[in-house]
Each structure stands twice: as structure tokens, then as C-alpha cells.
Image (tube, rainbow, N blue to C red; front, top):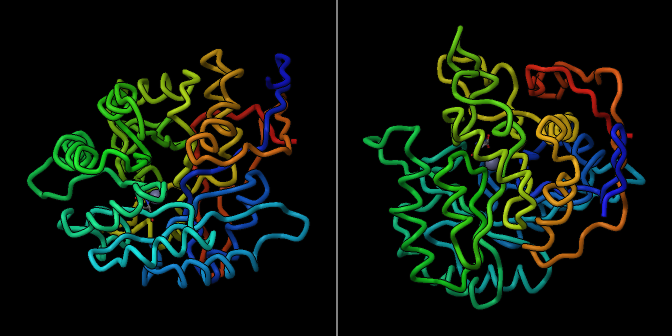
Length: 349
Ligand code: DOR
Ligand code: ZN
């Protein structure tokens, strides 16, 4: 049980089950921020070019490790990017060698650097069958890419048109529906009997589509899947604070330079690595659910991934508003830190 008082909470050290660390100068700047609070993170493979083989995942892991500060126990958990040419044997070997923890499915064209993703889901069936056989989970970006489908409906349509058929054909496949943004996805996960879980981001617990679009466009709140109506945000908060072991934190912290965000066609992504734990504590406290924070950040994820929870702990204390930088400097340019729009009182000790 977490140690708790009205202004202090000690929990097992959290993990981030969906994270973008990028590469090069950006990776060098952002990796220490995640390592400061998280012990493990599932690292997304959507680099340019993407991380598609076990050998590339191992090389990427080594590049990340070079930027983990000394004394930190942070470990990146690597993924391979699923393409229609992915070799099931390469994936199985990377899993057996302890290089990868999951495979990532991007529908082609769904989001940042997803052009090499999957268009014909039947073509990846042999990989999915192999993953089901060896117990390797599939992380799914759950949005259809059909331009005729409204962007606010793409997650709900994906569940019916893509995810249900995949799970029906390969029922033993362990799936994580990532960064869910709708009541539909929450209900689908909750109603499933096995082999399905979901990650929820920090920002989708805090913003709805008004934050992006009302009173002037706010590019720093634009991410994919795009935030939906308030009733969906409320459903996400209810799932996160429920204690249900199928919902856990995947921040989807996705740094882009301000130069690339503030464009006529700006990049999708919110950078939350720095203030995620303070944001989450504020959300859970406001909901009267601080006792459920540990399940969401530190217990449910390892359980679904069949990994032990972390032994180390983290203490959060409540006090005067926390200060954190508005931007982080990287060798590629400044990256704006997610602004929850309210003061944060919980700080990581
Ligand atoms: O907002 C997002 N940013 N959503 C994604 O799916 C990708 C990510 C990125 O890589 O920037
Ligand atoms: Zn992502």
C-alpha cells in the first residue's frame, strides 16, 4: 500500500509505458528529464528512418543509455516498428535476446513518421501470430487514416474496423491500445475479457478539444490522437483513477522544437516528461483519488507487461506551486513544456 497523508504520498517508482526520446541532440536533452522520475519507459521507434529490426533497436538502446545520467537506474524498454516487411523471426530473436519489450503498430500515415507503417493488416498476420505465440505485446496507435473519417471519430472507427478483427483473428495476442482518448475506447477495454489494456497520457487527462481550439489556436496542445470532447476526458479520468489494472500511464511525451510546432502545418505532440508526476498528482488529488495514483503509474503497467514493479520509491509532497521551465533548450532548438493551465502543488522529492 502507498504511504499517504494529506500532503505526502510515497509510491513505488513510476514507469512510462509510452515515450518518445527521439535521437541526436533532442534525445540528449530530453532523456535526463524522464530518467529523473521514471525507472523504465517503453521507447517509441518512430525515428527517421524508423527502428524496424532487432539490431536497430539494440543500437538505439545504446545511444539512449549514453545519455542516462550517472547514478540513474533508468532503463529504456525498446520496441520495433511494425512494417509490412517485418520478419517474424527477427522479432522473435530480438525478444528472446531481451532487446525488445513490445512491437509498435502505426497505421500508415496516422501520425508523426508513420509512413512506413501498415496499410494491409493481413500482411502482418504472420508477425502477429508469432508475437501471440511468444507472448510479445503489440502497442497500437489506434486511429484509422481514411480521409473521409472525421478526425474526432478515427479512434472509435479504428476499434470497430481494425482492432476487433485483429483481436478476433489472433485472440492470444496481447494488445495495448495506446493513448486512448475516448469513452468508446475505455468501454472497449473495460468490456474485454483478456489480452487488452490501454495507456492514458497525462495531457489527455487534462485537456479537451476546447483547449486547442477555443479563443485562438494553441499548437502546443495539438497531439495525436487529438483531444476530444469533455465527456471523453472525464471518462479517461474515471478509468485512470478506477484502480482497474488495465489502465496505466503512457505519457506519450513527444518533444518537437517550437520551430516545428509553430508552423502552418505544425507537428503533433505534447512534451510532458518534466511535469507529468506533478500534473497527475494534481488530477488524482482533485478527484479524491490519491490512493489510486500508484496503481496507475507504478503497478498496473508492469503487471500487464509481466514485469516486477520497481523496488525503489518516489515521494510526492504538496505545498506551494511547483516551478518548472516553460521551455527546455536542446541542440535543435527550444521545446515548450506542457502547460496544464493550473498551478501544480505536488512536487517530486
Ligand atoms: O502527438 C503525437 N506525437 N502523437 C503520436 O502518435 C506521435 C507523436 C510524435 O512522435 O511526435
Ligand atoms: Zn506516441
